[in-house]
Amino acid sequence: MGTRIRVVVAKPGLDGHDRGAKVVARALRDAGMEVIYTGLHQTAEQIVETAIQEDADAVGLSVLSGAHMTLFPRVVELLRERGAGDMVVFGGGIIPEADIPELERLGVAKVFTPGATTQAIVEWVRSNVATSQPA
Image 1 (cartoon, rainbow, N blue to C red):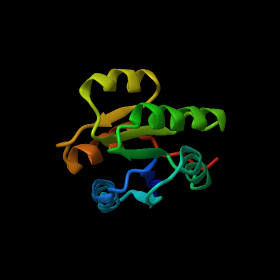
Image 2: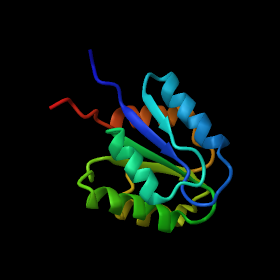
Image 3: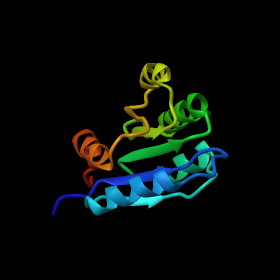
Image 4: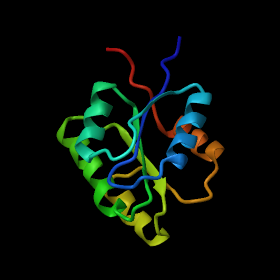
């Protein structure tokens, strides 16, 4: 039996709108992935702790607050510090196109902007996230 992709979906920071994150979490789950949704108001440290505890293959971040240039790179940096730098970090939200190349340079694998379909997100995760095989 193949190992299912495990994705932590998180809402870092003070942003209180999680409908989009829940829609994406449900779409990934419906596509056969294992999804751990952390809920609102998570710190980067809490998100990374959850991802490591859950042995996730990827972390999906949703940021609408404008703090993406701080929060996304912080999660990537903490994962690297914890030896989990191979975990794929992707995200979405209200993110200006101009910020996307810098986020990618800092280690965010993919940024989805408003209007991205859940189908596009599911297909991207399937194509770009390898499952961690049992040792």
